[in-house]
Length: 394
Image 1 (tube, rainbow, N blue to C red):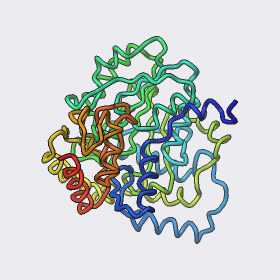
Image 2 (image 1 turned 45 degrees about the horizontal axis):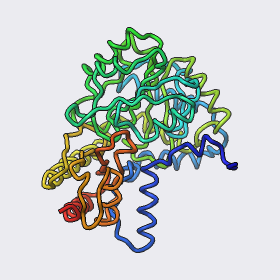
Image 3 (image 1 turned 180 degrees about the vertical axis):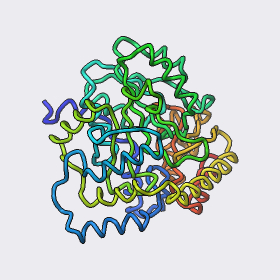
């Protein structure tokens, strides 16, 4: 009998973190690895945010924080939702957590009962599937393809719904595909959901500001979806604050209160200094971080142009986030320098070992024909990495 629980034994290891750990191990052994696997901006946190943290330290913020966040931060989040998304929340509807990942885990733990089905448009962020299963829910994967920009259609949503469907989880801009749902596309999904009033939506908007011109729509903007949508966001991506670990939700009050209750027994309130700094981030207009967005767009175009020169990489044009998600299934069944490629995991490992470039298999995101390439790296690293990939598959 194992000393460990079935819960943890049945849980997958995060593929993105596992690849990052493998890349670090190889670097320790003297290998020149270029990391295009992690979803982490390579920018420093902006100075105006760092200065706010320093000020909070000097003002002796060092005590436990309220479980659901400082009132001043929640007020700043409310103003952000109003300014950027046209959403109106009250204080009891906001919960601040130790990163958006904890916010998602809170929602799952407070809403999913054993056997509840949760629809996940594929590709989905790597942790959705296991967070659902950890809470005894059943992930229902809806396959999409590069031809539809990896977005779920209203017809696909309709066909995936059963009497056991409890929720839908999606991200826009999407990790890993970079796809952005338009207002019209989300409205079509909302129209389907009008027939099923007991289904809730988790709208993961962590990449909201990393958008290359299509514009951002929140599902909760639709009046008939507001009371059925949990909007998840945070500061990790757009503000280059991954290690600060602050995420938040805006949700119907009963759900927010339940998340607050759950968090009170797991971690309590998030870091005091990080929260004070995030007040400043929330008060800043998106223009304050536009220099990062502009650079990501340049890198996206660079990656797409370089990949276009490699046979077997089929790409679309992502409208947000900082990933491309090429279909590389044309390599399946082929042997490259003595290595047979059976699937995306084989291909991703081959690139790590042969090209010394870390990517992530699409299997982890529910799409076994693709790999995820992060362009949260310098232009010089991107050029070198894709040149290495081209050489390795030639």
